[in-house]
Length: 337
Image (cartoon, rainbow, N blue to C red; front, top):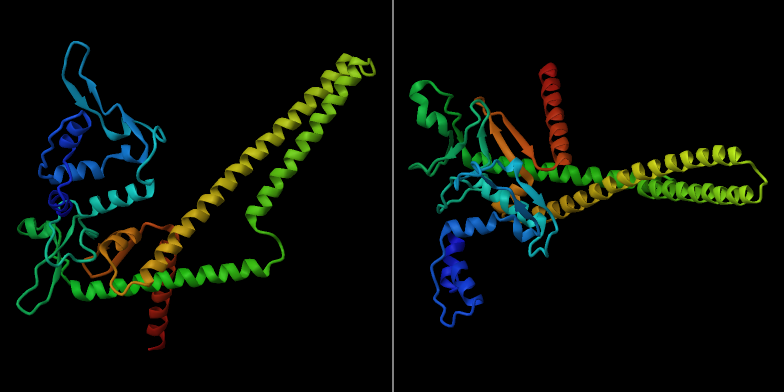
């Protein structure tokens, strides 16, 4: 709605007026933008260069009626035309749309709103308006609606305390991940052997050289056959053996190239995560957008236990290890007492 209002104030033509202008209309009116139009544009994958077909089909060849097909049956073809936004920006927008679905923009648009789930019933945890003392509480929405039917439990918690603690946890996880990466980098630098990526490339070059050698052997054998130095049977026998060897080398190269592509993708994801962490740790006041880049959802147990689900596997592993350390420390303290 805020985007729609902004576009209307700036007198940006709505799509229908824009199309009229492209068709040669001399006078142009400025219609008011609707929320649904903005949402459609933000959710349209065509702007990433992807063409989608097969969203609908006819009930039968006799009928003019169409039915919508499920998304898994759609035909998607990427890079069909020039993209005007990146795939990453599009996916980021979809995460934001999904996280804020059904929520209203209010004066206090809380950082973790839309990410909170009830562990027991898997419904949303709502954030209530401040009470007379200024306290803000979270509560299971399904319980609020159907509590009289003994559905779920309140899961009440102080949201202000929760938000502060979650930001501390997120910062701790990010710092621990950064420290771990620094140690890994130092460990790699201390080793005399070359990086894994370099070794893979070296193996690929080695197999390519071997293929060239085997190919030259085959050429020499062919010349020998023409000169009647070797028989046809000898040539065929050795030629088949060389072809099998070359085929084996080519398969090895394909496997190594897949591994190399995986390492490249891993490096790209690490760079993205490193940049995101640097941006987050440098913020005095984190935004909802960057929180949603890190976190998929947070589940709240009835006993106030919190489960965080990160969008990045390395952060999830760091968080799990930190939780294990905390649990082990608590067990040790109990024994000491």
